[in-house]
Length: 143
Image (cartoon, rainbow, N blue to C red; front, top):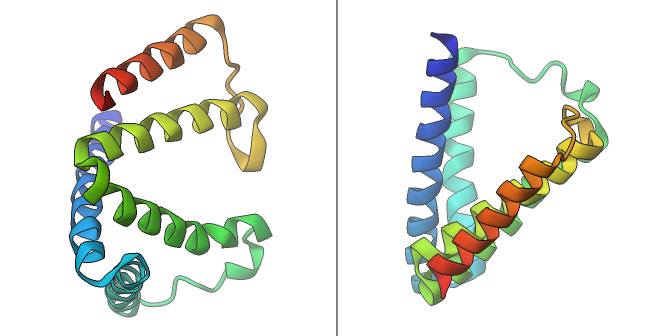
């Protein structure tokens, strides 16, 4: 049962990524890429701040976070900027398939080498074949 719940949470995250990508593209078309980045992160800051205030605390252990993990906010700016730029030009489906394929490939490499705190999971022939099929599928969707 817990695996089902975790899978459901991951699926909700995927739905949220698709919606955020679409909305970021809409915003970017109106106010430009940097405007979209600002609006998305500012509204996210408001929600996160409100939830953190309602929950209480939550930041006491921030000094124990690895230095490289603190770049997640900067990376979020890159993500929203790239998506805001790409969605109006490529369409939502093509943008998402390219970003998802990129995520999975980088994830497999990080897992293989256990980089940046990732759990080590070797890149065996089956996983490499899966990546090949993924790239082929992405190409078929985008072409």
